Image (tube, rainbow, N blue to C red; front, side, top):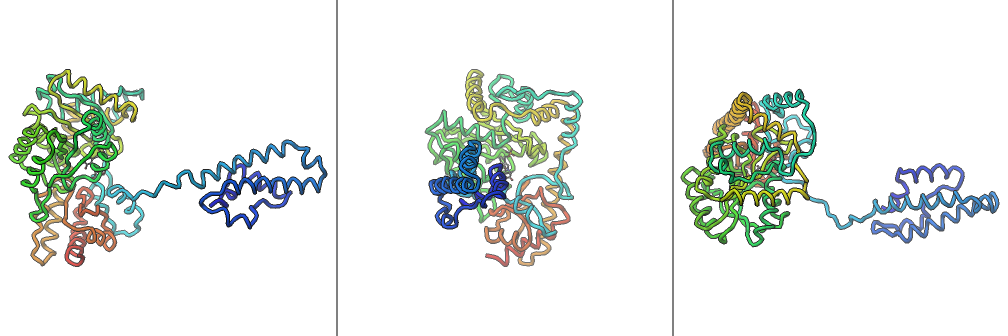
Length: 497
Ligand code: PGU
């Protein structure tokens, strides 16, 4: 490793190379190489450098006389400069980061990286929850293009936004979530901050919990979106799981869920998926939501909704906000993280919001002031582009209508592939296995029940990329690929344990 310092292509290295034409070649004495291992032996390199520098100068001196060797101060200065540069290269090369281990690939986003590296034509990326067209291409909504064109024509500027984000966006996003006529909006009970999409909104709320509820813990569904645990871990907020998925019924373990929420310490934060639960695609019924709200209210817990799929589950923005609005209607204080990655296809714009419904306007003001205080040293203020798109689309009745239509189309395409996949599986699988759970699941995903080894088989043998918990993103599937996918699932399910 240390020898790499002599191979660096830096000004120092080329200067040394140029001079080496006139003088003996610069390379570390071979007897030193074995004692310059990755552990770094700077003092040895230092010693060698001085000895070698003196040797070369001395040789030159012998050739050209005392003046040539020592009379040239510039030469000595050059040595010093090169020495400094090489030492810097050494320091970079060898290891202030020796204690930093390689992180494992991300269980979701890492799947896309593996997919890109696969050269097989049959490959299919069902890992990340990102909508694709029937041709399996990324999709930019027409209404987004229209809004962007308008923004370009208006020549809007790139000044900083306030810490809380774009006012027009914050208004639009709260109205979309709670309904424009909701009394909590009219009475100023909602603290809304534009944040860095769903993830950033959750992270900001987690920081708020850590600072103002240091005794509280968060309870999250088992299973849940893979990043939830990372978010609370990094924010130093303790969490535990409540039962949610029942593999026997491939449905909701409602009794388990209620019992675990009941058993959590009073005042816990209960993380709930507003709609289209990720990864299971199983949501409580409206009656079950009522019961969940009862228990949360009784135990003085704080409901904390993650709404990443509003409009994407049913195709209707209002229907998908049912659960959140039910809690708000009961007069409860509620946290809601929102994302526009999926429903407006703004994945890379990082646009979303954290909303906190409070019991009085004065409380909302205080909460908002503290959220801003947390955001300021984290990222200062949020990006403008996505916020303007959302504000323009939601704020313009024509574009708003067009968005709803496109969202219905996207949700509709996913429903079609869901049906086709079920049909293919039922027709091809002669074992009598009931695949109808796929039709009961909603949203972007299907939770197939395939275990890790079976999921590995899907990828290794069939080039179907998916998360190791058996989740497939139907948003990345086309009707044309359903038969192929059914073959892969049947093989993995029946032939791999
Ligand atoms: N909450 C849930 C439940 C999600 O599924 C996702 C995205 C987010 C929040 C955060 O999305 P933002 O893009 O930050 O708004 N889950 C996708 C996307 C990939 C990922 O893991 O970030 C997924 O495939 O599960």
